[in-house]
Length: 113
Length: 115
Image 1 (cartoon, each protein chain N blue to C red):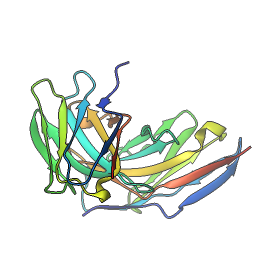
Image 2: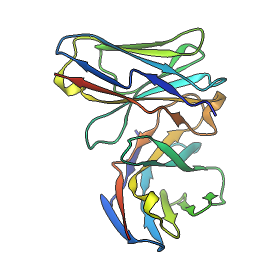
Image 3: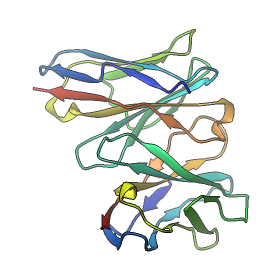
Image 4: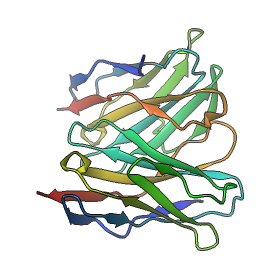
């Protein structure tokens, strides 16, 4: 079965650089969520999109932005990277109304040096 | 704001035995969902079991079952016949019903399986 695809799997950036993470949801899933998980931490919700519109917003820094495109894939753009942005970034998708729970991708590990 | 509390940072159980992981939550909502996710060393987040708040019957998935006490706002996970592959971080999570709200996670419980 198709899963949530995230790219790249690993990314190394320097401070103050910009990074773009991509997420391709499961086919027919119209809702995408982004989470950030720091080392030894629980995942923190950043932002979600439903039918290409922002739906819910969590603890996403102003330096980050995201969008969902017409094919339902989503991109998380991160600017002016800081050392503290080093984390595992998960994307998850759900079918309409999310009643079946979320399916998470394998994550993108971002290291800021 | 809703909060999720897992009071056991680490639990250890002998293989083939039963273990219960605790989770409590706080919310003023009446429509919500509760989940248990497993995160093995690969860091993949895997849905173990989910519970709709409006359902009185406790959810069960093979060796995994929950004890959902709505009035007490408690949602514990019982793992029967523990297997080595069950070793992982377990996160309890809450989501408000409707819309595309994000999950609120607890801090997690690290489950160790002793052979």
